[in-house]
Image: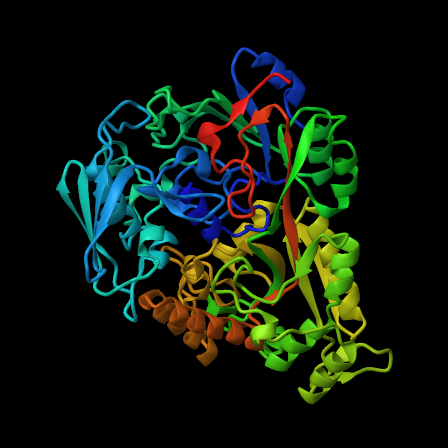
Length: 597
């Protein structure tokens, strides 16, 4: 569903999984085992999967990180086919585009209802856009991908009648249809929270639908609704009885009654739970591929592969020169290193990505050089002129020396003032592949005299550093490629975008940053993203996004690493899976069935 696709482009730990590829992590289970849980619920049709971490919110408009719940509970006007990427009707049964491409009228399906049985009408669509996503008092990343043109003008949304909504934009905006797949929110339950303010003058919407909310109060339009949430254990979802889809015989969808998202924070534990039958789906990491492949028939599952993932795995330095409360976000000495282009280029040459692919990924993947997925028609290949940084430690040393760095008697790298070049690298704990990547980067950098303090930390702590405190030096993560449409990554590349993490601006409600600087190349990439969204000619769009990739590889705000194959193991009892890198295992959850094989 496109609501999942949009989340994929906005979320931080997006390499953690694309869409609902069901990632990973797994921790000791509190209360009961997964097999016990499945036995207790044997009377209902049930799917048990895993999730990397606890959700931070159940409010889709406020989320900045991967949240596997949202793809199940939200629905947009349109959706995206998880295999082909083609747009398909969802809450809207049809749409009509004007000849000048500046007016779109959506016609909703008749009889739509929210999970509480209340009617879902054009009023909800207008509320969702005008009162939430387009409301400058609400800090939502979705607004970034709705901005149009040089001035970032937002669309005008108005109700024509109970079933029709008109979107008007000031100029042609090529990706506009695709971004209207964002989840629609219920006006009848949320309007008061938008118009009521707390003592600080912020809408109470900002604290609405947190993880402490009674699930019965969370009203949704997707195929599932939240039944219960046990922190650090699981989220249980129940079929939405008012979901709009029907099968060919007129039976209500989805078929599966209950979904359990088990919070698991270790790949080893995830593997054990899957092999023991406690999980129905798990992502397949390279180190476990051979083992899982050998046991497919014996343990009644199949491994599905969808080609390279659509996520971009990288390291990134904090290039923000600003201060908060009179204190620099980054130590000024280290900030000078990070903001030296030759330094970033040197460390790129210092990373042995081929060895990383061969050893950590068991050769199951490809080297990565671009922020746009290789499946996208806008991808620029090395053969077409994209710059690559093959492993070359000698070239790395040359660049460092040319930039004024020097080597001490014991081979340690020093800056011009004699300071030892040493910094911290963080990533999310529990992801063994990423931890192994960080350890190799630490070793590779030591070969050119750089000392790296590698520190895997808790997922939520990491997310807070990247989006709130901005207290980090270098991080290793993944971010979604956003499918086939580059503009879905606009909030990463626009200088004031909500995920412009390498030089993040203060988000609404946060303490201002003083002295933040935006470079010429940052502005140019941002301008090209604006221009690319304006251009309707596909050949010209490809050229524009080709230039963004060239600039990204020249100035290296992100240093790309390895892109693994997208793979998942799915129990044979789960019927109807159409796996792809774009959609993952469960993009068509509404038509999946489970048997008792």
